[in-house]
Image (cartoon, rainbow, N blue to C red; front, side):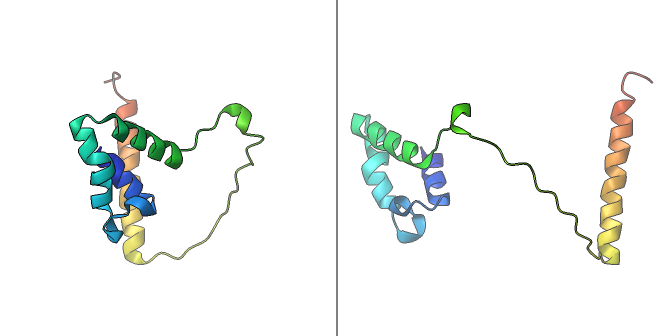
Length: 104
């Protein structure tokens, strides 16, 4: 239940926004009733979740647009080049090591 509160807060739902001090509203409308087994809290929570979530089926999608690719040239500092090459080297070593599994 707490995770749903944090999700509503993260999504910026004004009714339960933590920065507006609405945690008390959440606890009053949903939290306390949920702990007490009050059925109305379930329906309030279900309404909130249905408001925040959008469900689509394949029939709802008319057409998915093609992906857009962009190539950008950037200048890296010496430290960034070293870091990049170190990471690439580690990945290559890992690929080679795992591809040899069962062959040695």
